[in-house]
Image: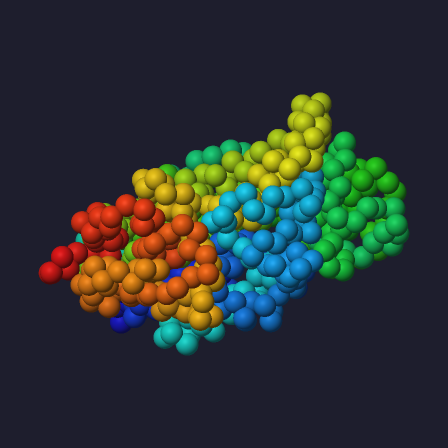
Length: 507
């Protein structure tokens, strides 16, 4: 049976992409090599991942946020003493290279269009379960225990061979991780930097934890961290990645590294589980070759510093889903699918640089120590804290869409509507939105030309933020803004909208 899209990899990125495609009636097959979703490295606090503001807002658009809240390991609303969540200041802005960012230093009002979201952590296992349930509800076939081993592309599609079976799809998306078979056999270049460190993530029982500090601790010999959650221990040893050799981590080895980095004689009583990783940073030269595309770790790998990996992958899926669906459905304007690489490749490159910069700060040498002191002073300022907190939370991420308005290219922010309606409900089915705060008849007539691909929404906002109308792409990105101070240029509006939503016979 031929499928519209085959996705290799049933992790969070692959499953979220599957929901985005199925939302638009695309036939999807997901092939995942592991038989069971459960694994120690993905469950509970060991599998903890932070979700940034764009990810949370996107999940809210798609009606998944309540399930995320119910499954979250950590859910902390950012609110001021008077309960004004819109103008909230977080109690903490996270950390950069283990240096904490104080919430009271962050200027939450510096950007009127910044996204507002709680601080959330969830296990990979729980997030996968949420996405898999939604995917199956939408008709996606998820096959576990089926490992892709060979792919072959031709003009009409892609043939995929996996564990003795052969599958045929019009398109193939590799969401199969850092060692992606799809990327390797698809002929993508994957250049970058070699590792400076070996990281350890372990579930361990410390006999004398009072000898160690809680949270992240930067020492002259490396980094260690206790928590969050019981028995969770993280180490970063600057050994150029030599210990990331595929061998099982022994208790004695783990204890020796912890003792050297912490400078104590701490004793590890039990080592229940341990895995290693490195700060190797690489990125595919393009995210598309013909009918083969990449997303998530298959397209870009880096260390987990700064909690960018999962969020970058989810943003890949959100960006790709509607564009690939439009291409399959036949209404995509020329070059739409090529904008996937054009928009997401710079975002992936930034994530690599962001993690590499943190490694440079943490290096246990005179250069690293000197940079640390400079960074510590910078983060202690209001401007510095605001800058770093914004980058970590992704509150002002944007694509360069060439429009002069500061909201263009950014995720659609929340507007408070007078009748209490939630504008996010209009994004649940993945359509484009033309949002009008003035009831302009010309805009209403324009929206009617797109055969249901574009919804017209008229509303009265308590605060329009100086906006009269805007066009929101199916992925929630604002692509056109009319401030209302000048006459409506209907021709320009139609040109911008059609460049994303495709032309119509009457346009």
